[in-house]
Image (cartoon, rainbow, N blue to C red; front, top):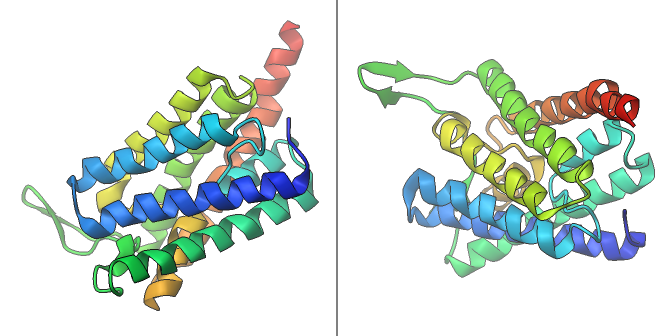
Length: 230
């Protein structure tokens, strides 16, 4: 499934750079609102699933790589290398974005927990605990799509579409509450570039838990079910 490591790492670096540069950039510019941000992220994933899916699997997300590793579809050394290059791509993207936008005044689309969010007559405050759970649930949905539509479907066109749309609908719901990172690299880059590390751990722990859970579910339930049907 994977090409040689150096080629795959370059694909992961470029793909993650694009996801943060375009996704966080759309959030920083505020164009299109929540819908614009959701589709910016989803379309990047969709495009790179087809561009690099046959090379690296187009994880472009440490939580996805952890899920694929938990499912036994990638070895630990390659998974670690993927994560390093994904985070590096996200960091570079954030700093390039800051340069393009003339500084960090836009907050560079940094993910943050909602405080004082007004929904009708209700004020919503997302605590770190709620943030971890929400990020874990949404990341679970994303990695579940990667495993069942991408990995098992051999990166087919419908698979790439399903993954991109899953990320889109997750951001549409979770964006106002946590920023719907679902991706440690997505949060680490803007946090470093802005120097604001508030609640960053939420965006490391939550996605990691959700990704691993989805990978284990695939390995223990869905993959075994397919094996029995063969």
